[in-house]
Length: 384
Image (cartoon, rainbow, N blue to C red):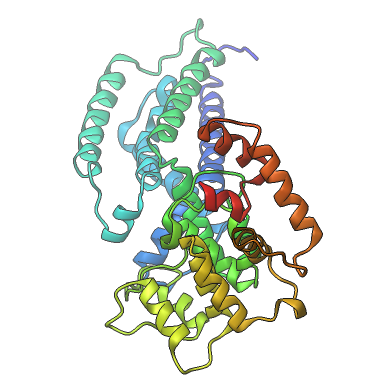
């Protein structure tokens, strides 16, 4: 599409350029927040409003996009850039968007700008200096050799550069974003969705693991699926350390309340707390028993696990969760016993695990190769 910019259509050309740039910016801004950075804004909104307001998946990106578009309009009115460089009027809006997208947990919780405190005013100062230079050098003069393509091309290039720059400085830490989304879904009671967040990734964190374990427990699946997820943190990944911090959407007190008991001030560790529950006179909840048994599995203390399991459950009258089946089978092999109530399918899979492991001489090869097929079993966790 090529036509000459002249006195009759210059207003139309300016309108088209503004429309194109505006649509491109709003679309980018909306999908950037909705698809990538929404969880960061959701957590920031919760912390700064002290939980009084709720993040909306659709309305928040729309509102932010419109506000940044309004800011662009004000900037353009002040800078009065020539049409060839009209897209530069979006720089402050992109700068604000980049600041919002660069939040991390520390900045959210302590509300400070970090390097943005001096980078932002410096960039804005440089921006307005450059805008003045451009305005003085390139005036919107009607020239027959100027075409619409000649004007729109630099604007699209400028938008693309600022879009890439915003993406590069934003927080793209997968695990952090998994944490935020999992925390939000757990707080909303969407436990099944919560455990599906990043389920194919081998990356994890202690907080993410703790949230996943709680989401599984709320579905009575903790002992069934605990090893479907990486357990890099052992017992520390099972329960959060109890504290009274209020800027979390899922408080440690909520997790402990689900177990039926909240730790007292004298409790120094999760293990101490669980031992008090199991040795106390009060009736223990099924959730507390499962947490204790899973704690022993993560600790790789099969003797303690076996003792508590048989004290609380009759294996011949229940469907034994998968992690318990695998642990009991492993303990029975160590003791030279056989268990009739372990399903044949589990026994066959254990034999397949041992056969595959025997194919490799080096410990590293055994660990890496068996992980592909048996990484979600207690046997693999216990031996690695």
